[in-house]
Length: 109
Image (tube, rainbow, N blue to C red; front, side, top):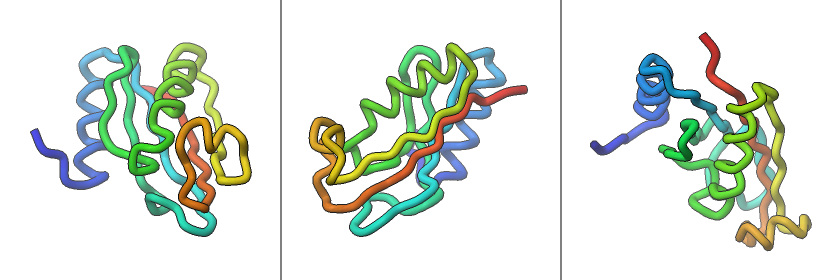
């Protein structure tokens, strides 16, 4: 299946949730400078680590998925920030010169 928009991705997340899977949604909430994805971009993650979408064009998705699994487990949302000045940005590959903030929350009934 090809998902062509954030609406398609969110629709798929809802299907996962309705099927009884734990699901989190990561959303780009702020960008500064040269950011790989615009505000409003989504990445959805299920409890097994399957994911759809993108919040960074691939450079921080691994870290976001790991954090999302914790959000699914404990229900506590997180605000993640990545940027070129942040040591973790280089570790996860965000070397584009910009910064992004990603809000991760669990899908609840």
